[in-house]
Length: 500
Image (tube, rainbow, N blue to C red):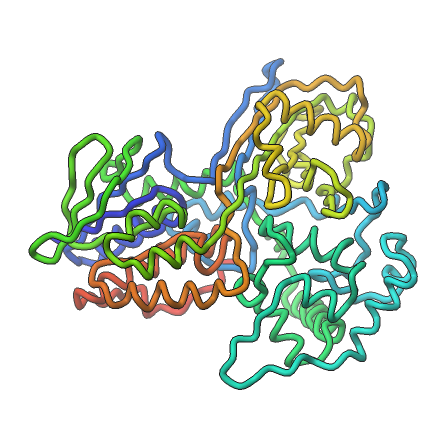
């Protein structure tokens, strides 16, 4: 029996563990031991069930990601395998609306905006989100020639450079930064498009214009909806998907299916060593050690770096070059009749140019059915990011008061509305920053790891921060290792199904 040591019990580590279990179920002699430094599994996926103060029900509070992109199949596939597919939860699109703060006032995002490109003329022409000079500059995208890319050279540039070059500064400040940069909590001046949204670079090369490209995409989407309408009784296909009991339902199901008896929490790995026979030894924080035939390091880059430095300096240097930022989410509950503003929206985006403490707010109980009891409201605020690390030095109570003040000033929250409870979730150095050069760094890490038998890295620091990306990274890590052992998994030859 060959053992894979998995360092890290977040969604990537759980994806690796469940992959090993599926390999074992195919008859292969493999097993895993997973080691997680925290006392709980799931990493940044954390859901808390909070009883309603008057015992009317419960609140479902997601502290980290509250959803995944519906178009990415990994979560659907895992949900199907673990028996929770029927608990997938679409957004309530009957109340879909997004507000953007601009010059101190809230403006509804124009209908037809895709990423940061308007695809419908009338909503774009009539919105007050942009000035007329800004609108004219955005329309000039139709006439600006595509960037020339030298053969063999990586086509990359920052989000700021790309958007300003194609559609102007106002588009970046008022739309692209909060919509695109905000997803990664990244600095537009540093954010690599080749690493985060390579499709945008491809669109420019293929269409010569982002407006033309996104108009074509919108038409294809509309055509597919007409061709494949939602059947009666079928769940609607929305842009985002969650689970009835929050996102932790996914990681809990993965841990259960993989086998919790092989997972140890509350213990960290201090050192990784090669054994004389070519295996691996993990020295643990309690002074003990564990031996295995291979190791998957599924941690943050800054945790992986010291573990890998004694083994490969080049990998460690590349990991050290991946910057990270900290953030926090704050969920606050209210009586619905006290909030004092229109709740028919998914949330609010606050561009950096507005200089607010609040990055964004989600109306959780509007966006996701069942997140709060009837008559109650659940709001979630986001703070931190690369431009405001100082705010995270404040205490939990100070952060709550800061976000409440922002809710009152930006959303119009009734100053007399009394919170029923609040929850603060801090994510220390939890968001990797895909800066220019990230693609080359990851290629170096992967190339050098390929030359070290029994070693693989996984997680959101490499090729995608979304939940589906992290699951797939853990699965790829296991496939890399067991292929070295001559094991050919049947499931690796099954074409990915669309479960949605």
